[in-house]
Length: 615
Image (cartoon, rainbow, N blue to C red; front, side, top):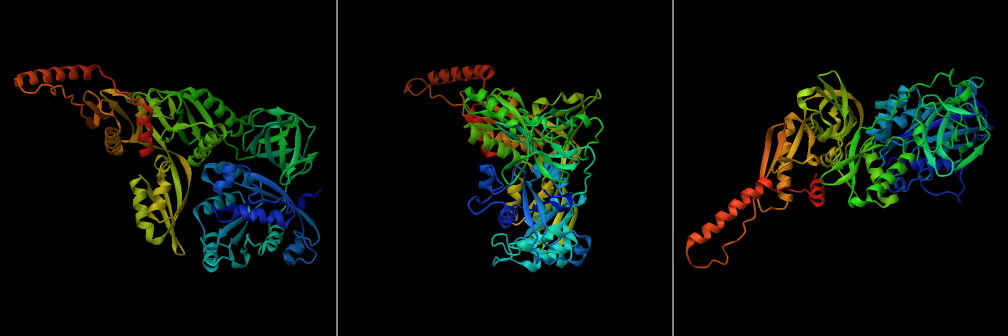
C-alpha cells in the first residue's frame, strides 16, 4: 500500500489524433499493469464508438505501479526534496479524459482531481485549439504541466518548429520538453521518471473528515450507479454509510475499489487515491459530477469541494421514430440511456407532420451524434432528427423570465421585452494564408474578432460567435475553406441580447408549426426565402394553387407559389363549337377556387426528411 507521498495523479491533455490513447497504452505496458496476453489497442476505450472514431467519450481512470530503477538519474533538487527516490515503488493514477468541448465540465472535474498534466503535441501538426483550451483550464487549477512532443520518429515530424511553438505559447524552457514516440516506446521510461519527479504528491489531510470528489459516473447492470472518485481528505471504507453532499443522496456501498485497468475490490480508499464506489443506486442522475462524497455522519459539517455546477444542455433536437408505432420503444430506449448519461434531458413533444416524439437536450453536437448512434445501434431505432436549436432566454413585460427550447414555446411577441441568445468564445488556429477567408466566414455568422496572434507559421484568432451559428455546419465549412488545416475550440460564455424573431411557415394560409424556426431579424428574410424555395421544389403539386409563405407575426417576408395541375377536360371535345370547351374550363376554374378555400396541404414524412437532408 503506497503512502501519500508516493502517489502521483495526472492526466493527458492532447488534441484529437495527437497520440493520447497510444501513449496511455504504452504506459500500461511499460509499467506492466497489463501483460502482452491481456493487452489490446485502445484499452481505456470501452465503447465501440470510441474505438471506431478514435475519440475518448467517457472518462476512465487507471492505477499503475512503477518502481523507479536503482540506476535512475535524479536531479539534485529532487534528491534534496526526496520527490523521487531510486528503488522506490510509486502509484501512478492516470485519468484518461475526453477532450471534446461538449464534455468540458467533466474534463474540468477530472483536471481538478489531478496535480499534474502531460501536454502532448503531435510533432507533425503542432499545437491545436483543443490543446490550448484544456491547457488554460489546467493552468487555472494550478496543475504542473509537463510538455511532451510525440511522434518524433515520423519522417514528416518537425520537432524544431513544434518545440518553438511550445516555448512561445506555453512559456516553457526547451530542456523541460520531453520528446517521445508512443508507438515505438522511445523515451517513455524517461517520461515516467519525469512524472514522478515533477508532479507533486497529493496534499490532503489524512486525519480529517472524509471528502471525495465525484469525477464522473457510469451505470452497471448488477452494481447500479458507479461513482469514480478522488479522495481529497480522510479515507472511505466499504462498511461506511456514505452521502453525496450536494445531491443529499445517501447509500451503503456494495463495493469499493480501484481500476487496474479492470475493477479490483479494496476495503478502503485512502487520501490521494483514485477509485470507484459501487453505490447500488438505480439512477445515475443521483450522482452529480463535481459533487462531494463523505460519510453520512459528517455530511452536515463537511465543506463541499469547489467548482460544482449542474450540467446545462446547450443544443436541442426533436427526435421522431420513422414508424410512428415505435414511439413507445423510443421512450423506453431514452429512459435506459438516461440511466447511463446523467447529462441527457428530454420531454415529450408532438408534430402534425411527424406525430409523437421527444425533445432532447444535449451538451453539444458531438454529444447528440453519439446518442443518436447509440439509439440506432443498441436499440435498433430508425429516427428522424430535426435541425438543432439553442436555448433562448426571454424577458416578459410582466417581469417573468423564461427559457425556451423551440420556436413553438415563444410567447406572444407583444408581451416580450427582450430576447437573449447564448454566445460562444472561439479559439481558432489557421495557417496565415487562410486568415482572411476565415475572418470573412466569422463575420457572415454574426461574429467578431477579439484578438489575433501569430504563432510560428499559423495565426491564433480569438472570436465571439453566437452558438446558434456554430452548431450546424460551422466545422465542415471551416475545414472546407482552410483545406482541413484549421482547428477550433469553443466555450459558452453566457447570454447576450439579440433581435430574434420567430419565422412561421404557412402553406395555403395555414401555419405548419413543425417548419417554424427562430432567427435574427436581419437574416429572417433571406432564411424565409430559402425555405420557401426549398418547399416549392419538394412539395407535390395539388389540384389547386398553393401559396408558400414565410411570415413574422402578420407580416409576410417571402412567398413562392406551387401552380395547380391543369386537368385536360377538353381532350375528348374534338371539333364542334369552341364555347363548349370554354364552358368546361370555366367550370374547372370554379371548382379549383372552391378547393383552394377548403383544401389542406399535408406535409408528409418524406417531405420533411427531404427538407432536413437539404439542410
